[in-house]
Length: 355
Ligand SMILES: [Zn+2]
Image (cartoon, rainbow, N blue to C red):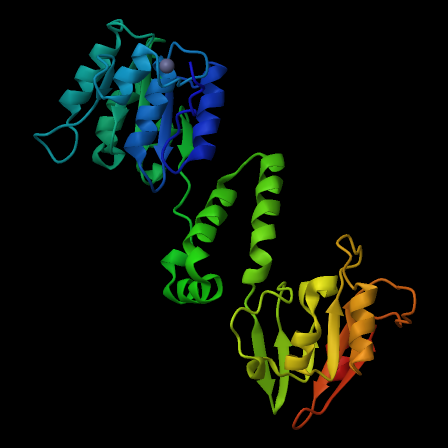
């Protein structure tokens, strides 16, 4: 038999994993609130399957109980609605409490799902209180509520709360951010946004780091390359892009007085063609103090110096051949038409001392 992907609530791998872990420890309890924005019905179905599953890793998705729950045909999973009234009537809830005392038909438990708790007023909830508190052990209650505050504190204090993640604030929801993302990433914008969302949902620190590293390896050359111009002085900030990350930007558009070396000054941060296009008077290297990735690469620094470019460092350990004064900041003062001064500062507020 082939290994099946574990069942998950759509878009909720983290919550699914937490519910699964609780189910496997037989710790799902008598009642739970499923709250937040998202597919609460799917979350309730998943939790009901976890409560009734007879497989190993609950919900297994393949045992007869799971399959019936997932198809909404399990006789021991009851969805409590009141088609005749706006709010669920007290009478319906009294029937629920009476029914809860009857043993399940075929399942390990009986599960009552309340698909929208905003339809349970205070009186209705009070009818349920006793059975939620100390009803028969086979009865379980799943309350779905976008906002769990619609439930009385007396009910909430007796239930676990499983929160669905809020919908991720992705670039896709922000027109400007999306356009910027598309400009930078071209056809890969959607794929990268999806991977970023997936990363945000990952709970296991080890897997998170692996995913982050894989994503980061894909992202450097999708950095936004900024060209700032102030009083005629142009500053090129290529982010983490290496010499291949400039896409189709015309060489003339890269021309700048001050160039922050891309990719932290690793060997691939710049090459002759790029330097010929930028023609900077000064280059700034932000090397990062541990130089784990061979930032501030000696060959690249030598190449910049050989091209007559003044070299400055915003963050770099001492390297052979460099004589960096101790400093807390590197401050550029911009004058007219490309005139600027740079100095290392330390003590007090470096910006105040320099400006
Ligand atoms: Zn199962």
